[in-house]
Length: 113
Length: 113
Image (cartoon, rainbow over all chains, first blue to last red; front, side, top):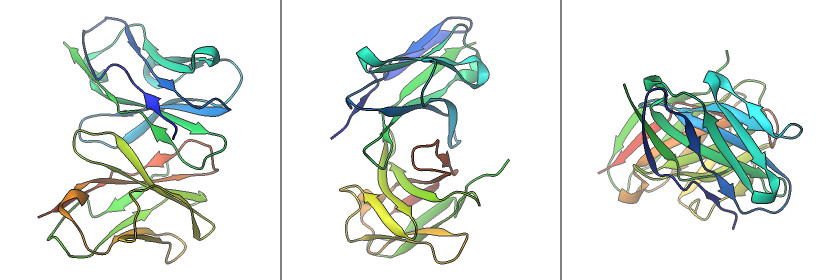
């Protein structure tokens, strides 16, 4: 079975700190990659996606992610977090030979004002 | 902006009862999905549906579960005889194409007592 690993389960940062959340997956073929965010009490919303082309993708709210094929990674970054970024972040992978998303276990980000 | 909607937002039922969770996907989307998220755990894939049939299902999606698209707009998940461990948030999602980003609804919180 395919797997998606998010190594940081809970991250606590102060406002203006830089953020990097790790995501690694196990599938060796072509993948589409996504980061979703779930704000408290809300549903999953797409932050950014990678299908092909430039491995550095920019999403909403100043987030970006870099696809490194050799490392099977798609880490999420933001140079300066805000209190409003407090949420849970999920990495998701869609392998080309499967018909579903595989989600990571999520990383809870707590930004202190 | 079009949204996926789900009803009800919260459903409380007794063990052994049948429940039907309803979803209205985005109108021009062709692929439909159900996921669940047990409190504190990751988002788990249940089933994908395309062209009026199940295209993939997980091991969680046993004979107690069924999905239906009874008309051109609704997509339902039925649990025939609920168990305590079915208590979770159930998310519906839809996508325009197979590997494109999925748009999630706000979820239905199912509580089985």
